[in-house]
Length: 271
Image (tube, rainbow, N blue to C red):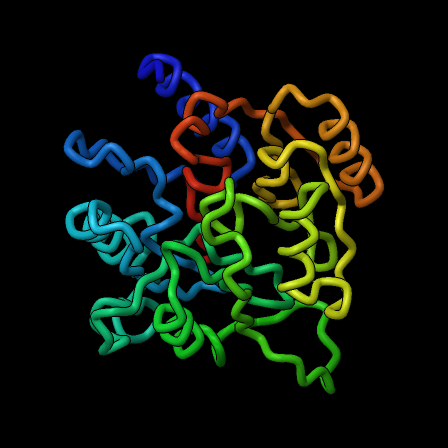
């Protein structure tokens, strides 16, 4: 792995993301003794202005890496005091009252209609229960009929456990509240079936390259992994055109060598 290339790709990622945001990007300083620190997605889940600090599934990611993000959310002046502990910010390590609960944010996909939590090597059922208690009654769901009684916080069975992808969002993300991106082949089939995607009204765009299935949607614009798979890129561009979405290709291939994808390196806040 080239550290120089990783830094260059991460800088480019931040530049593209900042161009899509109306507010300044909140960038945290590096933690040299925590090499996974760029992957901020895993240590906090944010949806509809509510945040839950996680207890990451790998012991090496607990402690300072998590506390740094929590401190930033609570104290950074640019957030204007939006996050208040016990009101709009919760901590799985304390509020869940279960030290065995673990969750990585990479296993959480909120489409605006459903809050999917993938059970994996990093996220267990106890972690899902904490997330359900935090977000279950606090989400503003989009495009949902008033008589829709489907569950909001959905546990996705651990079909990816032991597979070539680390997290749920390594295999599936969304373009809009009704459209998912998922890979062709058995992994995509199993994940979509476990999510009951078709039953819940989702259309899946199937891509040949699993890395391209991880996309970040910001204000009607899609950050797409520049994976080198032209077929996948053509399909996702076509889907964006059909839905009136803009797109930008971003290469984080060097970071991907350590299981990182586009969503890993940022957390989108609604304050």
